[in-house]
Structures are given as structure tokens and as C-alpha cells.
Image (cartoon, rainbow, N blue to C red; front, side, top):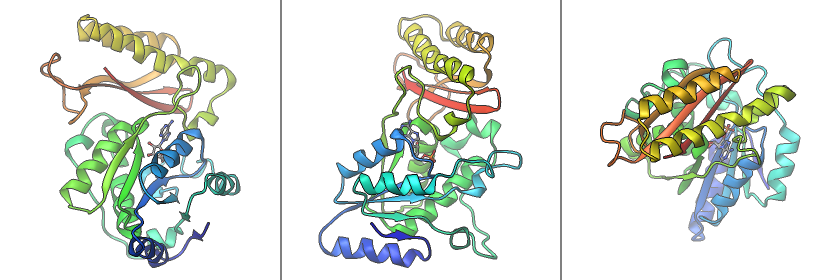
Length: 279
Ligand code: AMP
């Protein structure tokens, strides 16, 4: 399993050679600290193409001052072992100096699905994500790139960007993998104390209850308010809990005829958790 850290032409050569042999490639971008959620993306990718490339890059530009860039978990050796066991074809782990060389001055700014929700609380975030994902996809040139529905707004932002810029790569969304109590797997879950970890399961349980209420015809205003209050009483500090159009993330006008997604972000102690489900 080649591990490529320097120039994107190396990884591009692999992809071009595979393409020449009639083999399709799929890229799975990650920030490392891999867990079963990431590995499920690898399985998902292996079902869709002959060759799977996993990228590992903790992208500084999607972290704001005071966020956890320095402390973000880095478990390189274990990650590589996990990917080797999975039969991944190549790891692309570009150095920071490759991704952001001196005088780097370009960024990708998506509006549409990037507006509100995460952007209200992390205004820098999608500019960093869109820029790094554009650079990874253009660097590797895979046929497909796979992203988790766990980061639902991110998935829609990347689909929008790839479509708007006519980047020749298909974007596929893969389902969220959860712990047995419903908590969405995340590299950041390891920040939770034992008691916070217990409380954390309420995030998804509350989404489920709220979705059931809305599906059952209970007014959405009171369903959302009750759910947010329950989370606050349980110890969360809620950034948002919102019902949005699942395709555009716009506010819902016609609840009966639009695809619906319930999205939440909330802090538990110093850890910020996000989750979402279809309604
Ligand atoms: P990250 O390393 O957190 O940037 O995540 C890399 C990719 O894995 C993103 O596309 C995430 O949406 C996806 N991912 C993270 N957690 C999960 C999960 N629990 N289930 C499915 N995909 C996930």
C-alpha cells in the first residue's frame, strides 16, 4: 500500500495507470484518527470502484483560532495499519507544505447549502473544507469521492461545489455509522468524559423522538422547541436544532411535500457534537 506524502503527481500517476487498465478509482478524504465510521466509507468505496485511495490530512484552514487544530487526535500508525488491513490501494497524506505552499492565495467560497447552520457558528469552516476538498479531488483525480452523511451540510456543500465548478468527479454520500446507543461515531467522541459519553447518546435519541413527532403531525415549532429544551436540561448547550429541506437545506415551506432533514449541533462540556437524520 503506497503512502504518498509529497507531490500530487505521484498519486495522479497511480490513478492514471489504473484508469489506463480500465480500473476506476475512488477517494475517501479523512482527517485521520480513524474509527469504524471511516472504515465503513472504505467498504462503501470498495463496492463502487476497483481502487480505493484514502487521504489523511488535518486541514488547518477549517479550524478557527481557539478550535482544536493543535489537539485534534493524530493516530498515524494505527490509521495506516487499519487501512492496510482493509486492503486500501493507496494512502495520500500530503504535507502541509504541499497543500498550502508559500504564497498560496486561493479559496473556494460556496453559498447555497453552506449558508446558516454550521456557518452561523463556524463562519470559516466551509471555505476551508471546500478549498481543501477541491484541491484533493483535483490532485488525485478520482472517478468518485465518498463523504459521510454524518456531516450532512458538508456533503451538500461539496456536491454543490463539484457541480458548480464542473469538476469531473461523482460525489457519493454514505450512511452514518453509530455506536449501539445511537451516538454517531466521531474522532471527537474521544474528548468526552465518561459521564458526558453517557449523556451524548441523548443527542440522537432526541432527534429520533423529534422526527417521530413531526412525522406524526405534531406542530414542528413545538416539537423542535421541546427537543432543544430537553437537550439543554440534559446538559447540552445547543447551537441549533433545525428542520430543513434535505436537498437544499433551505427553511421548509411545505412540510408535506418537501424532503426533510433534522440537523443538530450541540456542545457537551468542551466537545461540540453534530448529528442529523431524515424525517
Ligand atoms: P473526518 O475525518 O471527521 O473529516 O471525516 C472523514 C469522512 O468520514 C467524512 O466524509 C465524514 O462525514 C465521514 N464520517 C465521519 N464519521 C462518520 C460516521 N460516524 N459514519 C459515516 N461517516 C463518517
